[in-house]
Length: 270
Ligand SMILES: [Fe+2]
Image (cartoon, rainbow, N blue to C red; front, top):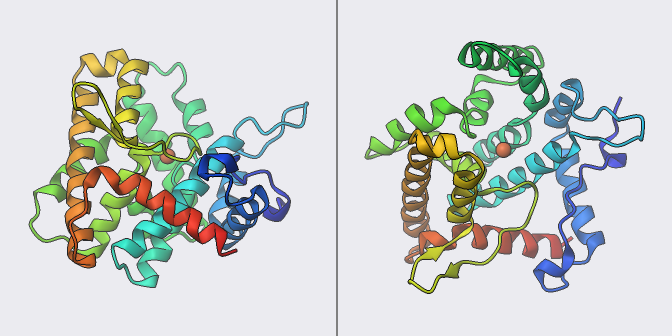
């Protein structure tokens, strides 16, 4: 059995990136505690082979667990900004933590498949089945499916954006979809940049630019633009909702930095 306290899933977030504070020990303590609170999700990472070690004793897939842990920390803060109940916040954190647990198996199942669509559907069905057998609720599975799935980008998120009034659970779906859109590995977000032509780029825009470069075929097919457009609308909608809650205007571009600044504040309280 894997012991999270001894695991290496604590993200290697460089302390100097947040002004030398907090200390690496504080970062470690914060993420270790979060990982322990979400151990039910991380157990699934172990079950699905993410923690297997190479002969050199390295965890080749451990970065996926780190990525999920960072998304869970961001989901925790965004839930508070959106005034979710503690119950819904718990579901969203758990969904973030489990969201990519099947990455390795998915790759194995889809690799070299002559019918990728069918292979992805099979991987998804297998992943859901394992989660259900382990006692994860449909609610958590629904929220976890918000992250980067084709269905989420082309159907579920756009349909939600059409609605005038959203339930908190639907907002939670969009929130995690957005977090996954801009989270790169387990890195802190970089500050908003204003280019010489006046274009403003935040972590979300930079991630989408990166996807365009890495996947020119998806860019050419129009898929990347759809993903960017949905993410952009979600960002705007989340800013509107947060603005209403906090009673002051919020620039959508600031959301990723605002979330990380709050994580840093919480780390320092540890
Ligand atoms: Fe992810």
